[in-house]
Length: 171
Image (cartoon, rainbow, N blue to C red; front, top):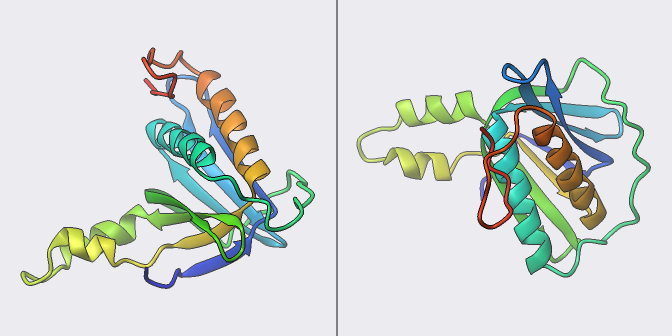
């Protein structure tokens, strides 16, 4: 994996939000670590897919308590160090730190890299080798809270589509 542009390490807080009225809401994921803050705008479907991936990862991995849970303040002071529209998202687990990994990518940087790919470089290969915009480490309880909060954020608008497996599928 390429080195991230920003590495927040273990974060203090992760918060999903929806701004606006149902039917025309904008979704974002706020991240804080000390005085550093980031805002990743995303589609409702991306928020739901991230929540689904978090749920699956939490059932597959036992760990995630590498550090005591930081005190969440609910404060995400502006201006944000990073504020971008989200492209790809990736989750994982860092056995060395016993924390979960969250990687977020800027959609504009991804699009530009794919457009500028030479013929020898496949656009997919270029995207796969891109540097994440943000890398951060998250505790199990922070991911559990994210999952719960994301469910509330998604369901506070128009009702989600029914799902056979109980996962979120945004309208």
